[in-house]
Length: 289
Image (cartoon, rainbow, N blue to C red; front, side, top):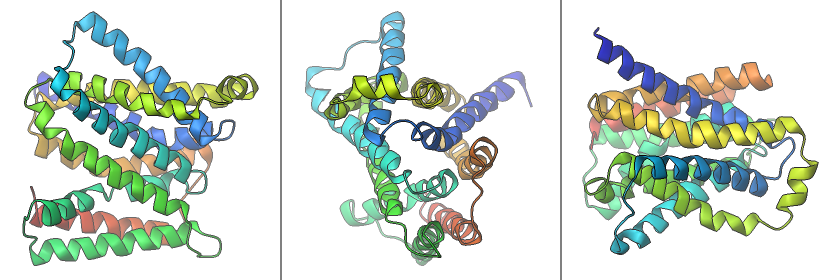
């Protein structure tokens, strides 16, 4: 393996570690911040880093006709995804949340079927069924005494919103660099988060330092740096090859949550996670687009 390959996988591994740690980071920050204030602080920090990068890199501003698309994608990928995920993690553990988010390719396949008219093979339908069953088991395993946890619905809504965000990026990536799309969608998505501004100053003053540090970590590393590392890795290898590494995300997230928070998944969550990952694998195997 050459030096360039090692560097590529170093970028990918750094991205995966940061993204995987975000689930535990959210749970840690929620110990001292409300979900709304947490997501606002996180993306104020992320936007500050991204705008500083944009200025130094002299990224061109988006064309006026694309502003609406950037705002819509920002709403889906930042406000929709991260708000739903953060509120969901009030009751759903970090490892279970990461497993539910891993079902995102299932939503993408369904969008392709119902909105683009693409046919799904029997193998892909079987994968959808397995992933759905796995998600149900995870939700049951998170509840009291094997009861359903409503927070799991919010995490699945986050996966749905994130899927729409990634699908909607495609037209913009034909005209802008991955860095520009990342910067402007994340900054645009921060704007609607100011709905959580009331009481924000008082919350920051009263929050423990550990919660504030966790929120700032979420903004700077999983929220900004990881996207740039991912873009650098994508520039060196085919996207399909790199995407296979995302299967490590829930595994890493479970381990990080166990070490950081002492949260280890229950048997039903592990069983549901395995079913969900097998289902996602079947969907991607039989419906690679």
